[in-house]
Image 1: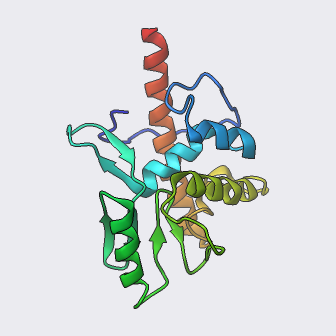
Image 2: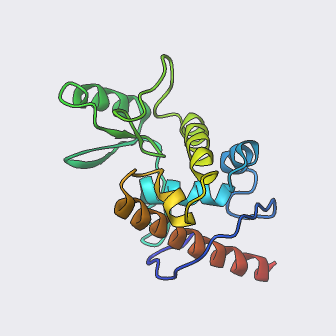
Length: 180
């Protein structure tokens, strides 16, 4: 996925596709289909929440070993490093967003035994939360934005940002399909 700037606004249609080259044969596809949430929408949220560069200057990908405090995001190369740093951060606050889908520990505390840095658990949790918001009778940007905030202006801005990423990824899919 070559994403340098996201500039286009898009209105998401409620369509799920199995021919999605970006999420095909991934946990996003499997979990999205199970939960009834568009896999590309889940992937778009993962990009917004935890994207990091891969080192080539053009490619970004969701990152599983990250958490964010009021001091900003901290990215780690290994799960054990992330878990140790998180334990230390939890000594001062529980308002921390954790993992690929940035689960907030204050608002969404984990059950015993949940692996906060496990991508599959993160995406499963996110798909369940997002599915509950998508079923509401509200504008799409707001329903998606509820994943990030219950405050209307923040939710709308977040929903619009996710939809821009979604739109950009759809364009990449169109290019990929045209090349086949």
